[in-house]
Image (cartoon, rainbow, N blue to C red; front, side):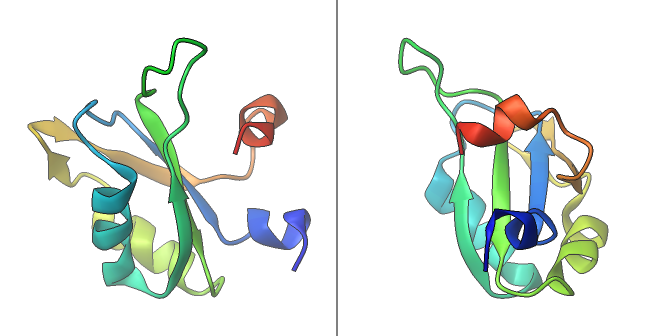
Length: 95
């Protein structure tokens, strides 16, 4: 499974509160299918960004996760879940 294959199994999650952890994101997105990993990037100062990624084991989990979890409220903020495809490549190299 290469990076291109992983792109088909990855979701982009935005509008995350800074209190959301990778572990919490993992537990939430696990509800839609088997996950490989979640990631919330940090800036140069080590401060967590307000977006993250969820990588699923199976491509079939991705649309289900979008339908199930888009609009979920975490710490009072509604998260937005979309396909990773079409996102600027620069963002994904930090993953």
